Length: 64
Image (cartoon, rainbow, N blue to C red; front, side):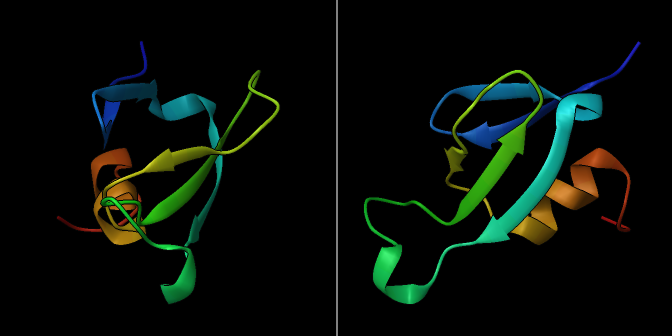
């Protein structure tokens, strides 16, 4: 069973459903928004308050 990854803003997504991660440009950041995350089954990207490196580390792709 896949584990859950915390994206911030009270959002959790199954690690095996995340297929894309993009850091937001400086002018797109606001109210804690840091990363755009694409999730299988959700048509629009989910906005996360955590960095792309932190999300990838939680997914097990990068060392913590």
